[in-house]
Every structure is written in C-alpha cells, then in structure tokens.
Figure 1 (tube, rainbow, N blue to C red):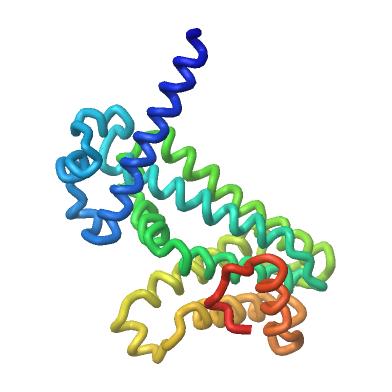
Figure 2: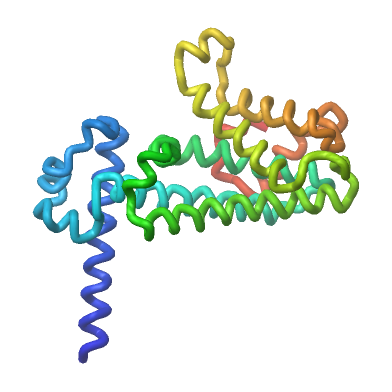
Length: 243
C-alpha cells in the first residue's frame, strides 16, 4: 500500500508545481521579472508562500524552472528538425532555422524567459539542479545542430580549414538568438527597416552560412522549395511560413 500512496503524492506534487509554473509564466509575460511578486503568485495559486518555497529555492529558481520547460520545447523542435532528410547538409541546416522561428512564434513567453536566464548573475542564484536541467536541454539542441555540421564537413560542404564544428554551432546560435533579441526592440526594427522579423533572422543566418562557405550557397538552391517540404513533412503547424 505504501508505493501507490507515494506515487499519488508524487503526482499531486507534480501537478501543484505545474500550476505554480503556469501562473508564474503568465505573470512574467504580463508584468515582467521585477514585478513578479511571490505573495501575489501564492494568492493566485491558492497556496501559501511557504508552499512555493517547498518547490523552488528562490524567485530565480522558479524562473529557471520555467526556462527549463521552454528549453525542453525548443529541444523537441530541434530534434524534429534533425530528422529532416534534405538533399544536402545545407538543406538540413535550414530545418533548424524553421525550428528556431517556430519556437519564437509558438512560445514567445518562453523565449523571453530563456533570454532572461542567460544573465550570469541571474543563473547563479538558481539551484544547481535547475541549472543542470537547463544545460541538458541546451545540450540536446547543440548536439542536433552539431551532427549536421559534422555531416557537412564529411561531405565537403564546409571548408576543412574553417572554424571547428562546435564554433560553427555557437556562431549559428549567436546570430539566430541575437537577431531575435535585437529584432524585438521596436526602435531598432524601425531603424533597420525590419517588417517581418522571422525572415530577417533567417536572412542573417544565410549571411553567416554563406560567409562560412557552406555549400550550396543560398543563391544556388531553392530555399523556398525546402521550406515547402519542411512545412509539409516536419512543421505543419508553422502557419507563419508562407510557402
């Protein structure tokens, strides 16, 4: 009789934790991190503030837990992209640009939290358990992209004397996430003349990949045709992808 009781308690704890995370995420989206008040959160979930601390060691730990959930969603999209069988490694890497854009479109709240926890001083205040969980999710994304970079090198699609594979993955992530963050600043979008952010982010990715000498270059293959395949075969929910 002991095991079922423990299992039920575990389920109840998991459900309570998810309730807290859902409310906290909505509050973050509406009010921002500085105005995320734990007393107000406790009132909304109808538990005591002490109960919140049974699940999360600090406000930062709570936000980090939200980021972990978001990273798991991002990793799932990236692993779907990794299954795409394009006719070249350049087509396969294009699948990740669609996956990243789908994440920011479908989960804008998670994207904002993901950006927040990248601040080193913030991450240091979260529990080691949450930090490690976030690292596992990041690792899933990194490995998915890294496998395609290695395949590109093996096929001769990338110059053998260029950047190491892991640096290429880092560069792709930097351009993608950096472009997305900067593109969310209205003044900067106005100055840059950006109307559609997703396409601008993907254009920046193409500039990087072409600059790395990743063949075929963007001008030498039909990217729109690849998008059509990705929409049909991998990401049917990507309604923003007009193909």
